[in-house]
Image (tube, each protein chain N blue to C red):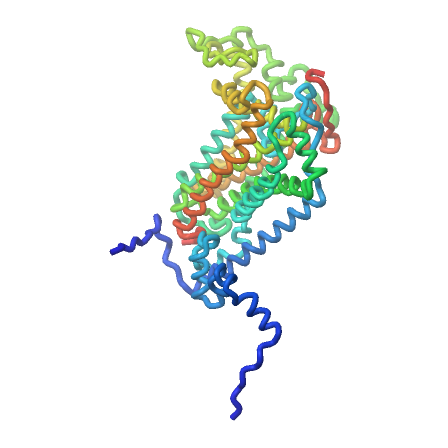
Length: 294
Length: 250
């Protein structure tokens, strides 16, 4: 005799009123069919109108300036300009993906699911986070490219002179301040720890022995402080004025901020970075090809 | 009292009958159009392509503004990319001597080759955007909450796989755009502390982008990553069903 095995849902769905339900055929299947059709036609039309790009054959001896990664990685390429490469290119995205994957384990409350912006303050939190993140990211980029100092000088005739030159961008903190010689070589291990010599970079193995304090501040400490501190500050401020009350609220600020920053960095990396990764207007974008170093 | 007499079948009736009530048609489609609720549920439950769905869902979930079909469309892009990708594979050889010429050949000598390549490229961009928007939809509707925690994690993995699929495909045309984008992209990976240079070497199969990188990216692009993505998609969809469909307010 065969025994009937009844599959049991891993988590029991809530009891539902039958009269609130519709049949998948035709109500859902047709919606799916139509959206698939619309997209097929749209992609078809797009493909008839615009050809996929194809430049000259790959030539390792001819470096385009600027060289750019695919557009969805240009946010990371933009970050690379402002901090240590390992931090921008690998650690930040990895840590962020882990944080994002951990969202549901941080916010386990059932409230506000299944509807758009289902909790009380979610809409205004989203709007405020978007505005703050977009404006803030642009300001940080403009500052770190020295554009703000340029504006102040060209438009208002204000100039800090030599004394304030270290404020022009983050790297000026390293180059324009009189750091004592010892601060660039502070030993923190009593032997030189060398790991994995890959050689080809000419840099040799990763070495752990000395700390270059100004470089560490500029390349790692300040960027990390900004990336952790500014969102925390925003969440704190919104908590103080009573808009952030739950973990869900905090996540809305964090996630919205991420989406906005991701968007701004992608747009800047795509449309505002010209030769030598200089910040330019989109209509000034040109790609030069030349031998490396020319 | 006049009894209504059956009318003689018209020509259209007879053609319809010949087309849809013959032995071969019935062997393929066992039932006609499902026009009763019972048959409509049966067809969803028993059809191999439709049985991913439940037989009935809450009426708010068929509203287009609830999901904008973003997840479904991401999957649809994956299917479309598979079809156009297979067609492109007929003409493309992943060798540094041939790859670029093959792409030119596809564009100029192959019937609908340019169209196929265009569709593959634009669908790939569309998929990256749709997957990202789908993630935003799930977040802002609070759909990651219990019992769907792990499915959100699976979704994050699928997001990464989508980026990787797009990234590995980027090299294949072997033009200046492809070559330097991958050089820049793998340099980013190479900057990782300690393991970076090793990772870059494994990705490229060498110190520079070359033949070894092309064959690695090609293999990952056409079989490795799609298989992995298909497995995670299966888990993703299955768990939606197991968790009782889309999230609903308590």
